[in-house]
Image (cartoon, rainbow, N blue to C red; front, top):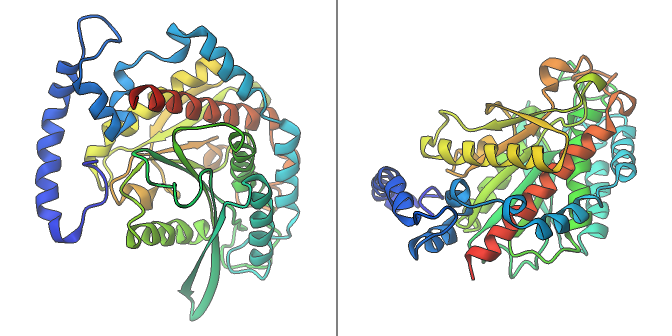
Amino acid sequence: MYYQKYNRLFLFISIMIVLFVSISLNNILASSISPNKGEYNNNMPSLCRISIITCLNNIPLIHQEHIDIKKQTDLIIEQVNSTKLKEWINTLSSFHTRHTKSDQIEDVAYWLKNELGTLCESRVFVHNFTKRDDNQTFHLKNIICTLKDSTESFQDNTTIIIGAHYDSRAENINNTDARAPGADDNASGVSAILELVRILSHVNLKLNLQFVLFSGEEQGKWGSESYVKYLNDNNRTKNIDLYINFDMIGYRPSNESDKVILEYDVGNKYLQNDNYSKTIALFIKHIASNYTNLKAQLAKLGNSDFIPFEALGYTVIGIHDGGVTENPNYHKSSDTPNTLNIKYVTSITKMTLATILELDRLSQSLKR
């Protein structure tokens, strides 16, 4: 895929190819569509094997033409359990702090490993990494679940990674002992990851799905940067089609419980990703309006764990509640579970689940 990782040896050649393909892609797509809406010639399936996202603008969604399939999706997303989401948020928030440099971060990591191990049928990988800061060395963990065996993972043409950071902090980032429950930031995002794994582990999917829980986001995306480097160093990046990030998805006043922010890529390192990122944002916005009560608003990419993925040329999207500016409990000891809107967390989890199911349907139909 032309926006994937570039081998250093062929960097110059790859850039020239990217420029050529970027200029010609619209013409290729236009010539691939027949006069009848929704019909394609033989060129379209081959493009879609490279990346589902290249085809999203031109493929009818389930609810438009396949009502029975939409009903099947509705049945699956109704499995999202608000009680489970609340329990996970409560447990994570019960740790005195999840500060990356605290003594408790190891306990949090082991709890998450055990929880994912149960949900993910033991297909859990712990990515250990070290970080040197303030003349100290920190031994940290990213926790990963793949919904296929490791021998299968990343072998198909389409891999989607969904991530969230599990660390928290107080207003003073250097205070490692202060109470930092981090219910919205980011126990809410972690709970959605756990719930998606719980449900999708029982669904037969064509897509490769990987769920990653990062540490060290608050210190500057330590976990995601280390994990992307690990993937890159081990040739595990070539089939990544999309990275979706949850960072704060739980705070929303009851009179605004239908607003969700979709962050898309604009003007960052790889400009050729901008169109694809906006395409997936609009796709998710459409999903939100058809499967949930959410009204998605598009915004430019901010600063979270999607940045290291974007820096290697991957399409990224961020999902959040706008809490950095709107949640008065942001980075405070008052960021507790009782301030969250669990119904809202449930809706965002359903929206993301429906998005995955629709993308998987496209993957299966286009690769036959």
